[in-house]
Length: 224
Image (tube, rainbow, N blue to C red; front, side, top):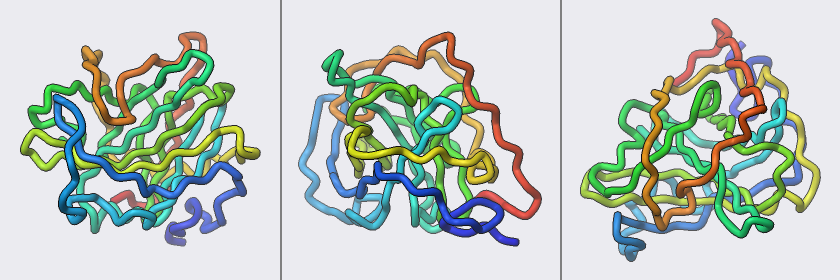
């Protein structure tokens, strides 16, 4: 059975969750700061065309992007982060590429920290999951971002934001994440420079937490 765009390898629907964000906030940036976005055709997707649904998985937040066709869109750099109101700062900001070089900052001077270990992007048809570095017991404003780097020293992004406390989060089943990584990113230790993009540098998850295991990829589910 083929993967459903709204579920895992069994074609089941995604579980309910109240923490849902339209990916519709657009911006452009370079190493110096924000830039005007004169041409919306630069965006990876149209505002509101993609929805980010938030879940938990073994103690971590998971962002699930619906209706994100990676085969049609080409390489994307997906990012997640959380604004911690208690500390008044952005934390746990990491990115994960859907293809080699998708998170290359292309000379912007902004270091792009990649997801670590078994976190990062997993793709199956129109369903793209991001197992984040954000502890599920941390309440705040959750950000999910799609970014493209045109190669001219700029980045163009579209973002969804939502309060983690607006309602209950569903626990997503590992079966919904089985399609495997879109690619396996390296595990660098970058020096992170400040960036105007919401997916800026932040703290990593606490050391005592154990990253979730990498779900096995079923034979009947081929990633893009």
